Image 1 (tube, rainbow, N blue to C red):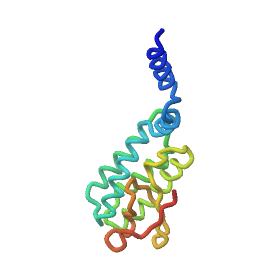
Image 2 (cartoon, helix red, strand yellow):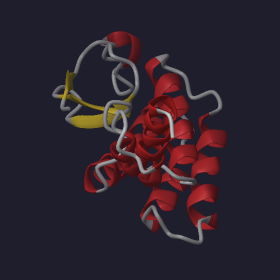
Image 3 (tube, rainbow, N blue to C red):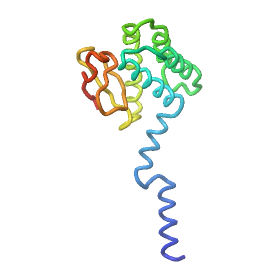
Image 4 (tube, rainbow, N blue to C red):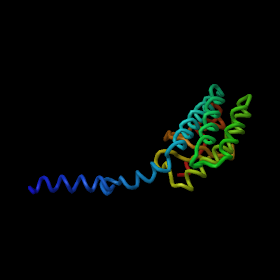
Length: 159
């Protein structure tokens, strides 16, 4: 074999077994964010965004999608209380009720990500001392779903 082919073969093998560029670490994170977790978090982030805008538009649909994803998951990745928390959020009739229902859902998803060491660098945990509650977001700037326009940037990153 020519040296060029051996090098190419070696690089291909290293990449295939996950030793190149931290692929193994990313693969571990990806497995924890398999469906339905990724879908649940996508819907959760849409809810979080609406609450930052002082709006409940579409929250019921996203909350129902979370509950359906959790109940339909045969692997039982997420605990059943996440579906119950999403159900409570889905029936919130006003902004205050939606924000209250968002608290336990946030707490459960924060715990899931921490327990499974998932989403590192993608999902950021933020805590608002005024609301005495945390949430997840992907944005690098604090966007508080509990205070919305009143105090949008109130909060501190926990990770």
